[in-house]
Image 1 (cartoon, rainbow, N blue to C red):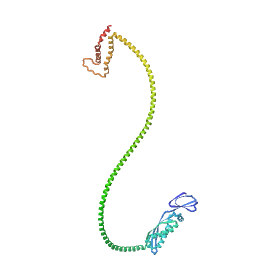
Image 2 (image 1 turned 180 degrees about the horizontal axis):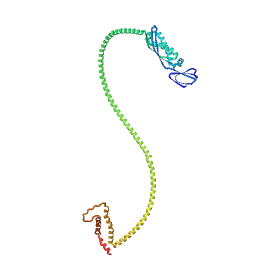
Image 3 (image 1 turned 45 degrees about the vertical axis):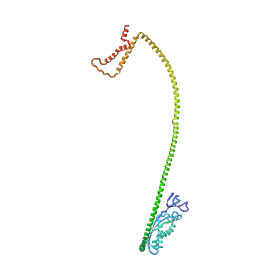
Image 4 (image 1 turned 180 degrees about the vertical axis):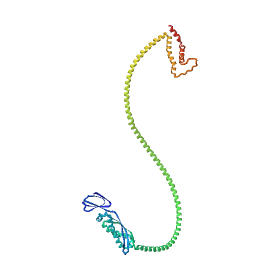
Length: 427
C-alpha cells in the first residue's frame, strides 16, 4: 500500500486500525497501512437518469405517460450524507447506485402524477418538476444522494386527450383571433382616420416649425459664421504667434544642446589628452628615459673605449710616425744625395743628361702610342695593293711616329739627339 491518491470525482474510505470510525477522503491522498487498514473507493460522478412513467392515471383518471430527466450524485462535501451513502453503496457498482436512484425518482414521479390533473401537468410543467424535485430530494438525501436537477421532458397519452385539449384551445384561440381581428379592423379604421387628421395637422404645424427653424437657423448660422471667422482669425494669429514662440524655443534648446554637446566634446578631448599623456608617459617617456639612461651609459663606455683606443692608436701612430719620419728622412737624404750627384753630372753633361732622359722616355711614349691599339678588339684594313698590310703595317706606323720624335724634341728643346749620340760615341 503506502500513499494512495484520488481525484475530485471520487472518495476514499479508510477503515481499520487507528480509526474509531471510517475516514473519508474526498479528493486527496492518505497513507494506508497494509494488512491492518482497508481502503475502498466510491465514485462521486454525476449520473444522468431518464425517468419513464408510462400510462399513469392522473387525478381525474386520465392515463398519461411522462418522461423526466434527472441529474443526481453522491454528495461528497457533507460528511453525514457521505457516511449514509457509504453504508448503502460502498462496494457496489455505479450501475447499482443508478438503479436505486432511478427507481426512487420514478416512484415519486408517479406519485406526483396521481395528485395532479393532466391540464396542470401539461400547462404548468415547472410546478410538476418542482414537486418531483422537492419530494425526491428529501427522500434521496437520506441515502446520501443529492438531486442536482429535474426536468419534465415529455408528456403524452394514447387516447388523444392531450390532442383534444389542444384542439379546444386551438378553436378558442382561432375564435378569439377572429373577434380580435374584426375589432382590430374597426378600431384600425377609426384610429387611421384620427391619425390621418392628426398627421396632416402635425404636418402643417411641422412645416411652420420647419420654416421658423430654418429662419432661426439662417440667422444663427450668419452669427455663428461671423463668430467662427473671428475666432478663426484669432486662432490663426495665435497659432502663428505660438509657432514663432515654439520655433524660438526649439532654436534656443537646440543651441543649448549644441553648447552641451560642445562642452562634452571638450571634456572628452581633455580626458583624451590626459589619457594620451598618461599613455605617452607609460609607453614613451619612461621607456625613453630608460633608453636614454642606457644609451648614456653605453655612450660613456664607448667614449671611454674610444679614448683608450685613440690614446693607444695615437701612441702607435706616434711611434709609427717617428719610424716613418726617420725612414723618410733617410730616403730624402739618399735621394737628395742622388739628385745632387745627378745635378753635378748634369752640369758636366747637360745635353747628354737631357738626351738620356729623352731616351728613357721614348719607350713610354711608344707604349702610350700603341696603347689604343692594344685595346682594339677588331681592326678592318683595306689595301690598295701597293703598300704593306697586316701587323707590319701597324708596327710601321708606330715606328714612323717614333722616327719623327727626334726632330720634334730638337724643335722644342734645341738639342739634337743624333748630334749628342755621335759626340758620345767619339769620346
